Image (cartoon, rainbow, N blue to C red; front, side):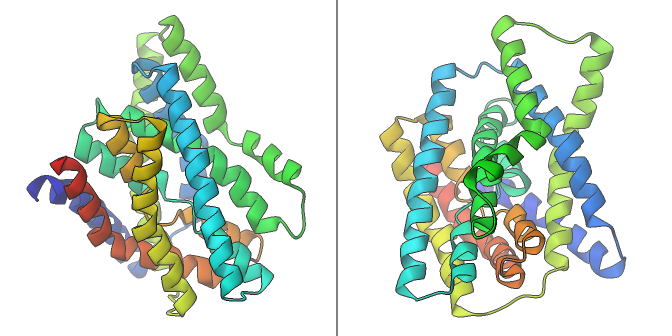
Length: 299
């Protein structure tokens, strides 16, 4: 229990502090989020992947597991939306809740639970795979009534994380490295990624006006209860073991991605519903993720 709490509680303390500060001051969350996407996250991806011994076969398994899990989660949510006769815009928003918060939440929890040296590089790989799906399938779901899947797919290549991943894997494969001064600059920037992501999460929740509709809690239940079960099952089927199994399961057990609430506002797809699901899933994840971690650490 001490190991579980030491992995989960720090995340909630930092998010809570950001929540309190945002309630007291009028802060510009969008500027911080932009810095995170275009500076901190690419640096973290490069720093983690370029120096870690991530096998290409393992990378392929992570990608396959992420795609399979996304397909199952989205499929179940679409079926549930049809069973409840949701209107098209709510059905799209409901399906968007399949995507977990791999960066703001998953990375620090995995780092605390499985170690920065062993667990974090694996969590970064999962984040890259999941982010590709979130920024393609997630965007498509948000605007499927307006744009084609091809246009949504092309939006993925607007984010530097994709290029940082490719360059990092080339450096890792070839055994290359930056000069000392440049390497230290990347490391300093990368070290800011996790605390900044937690701050962004706290600021986002502070700006949310919560809804208590049944559909909100159905989506939360699917993410926090069905999500971990499906993630563990898919990971075992794909052949993940040890820390790789734990990192994937914890990442995919995270609350709903903050980016889905951003897409809700950007594309006018039930923004209050998505913001509420993001907030409630984070609040309740202190219990669900603690249970997941306890079970994984006991194995």
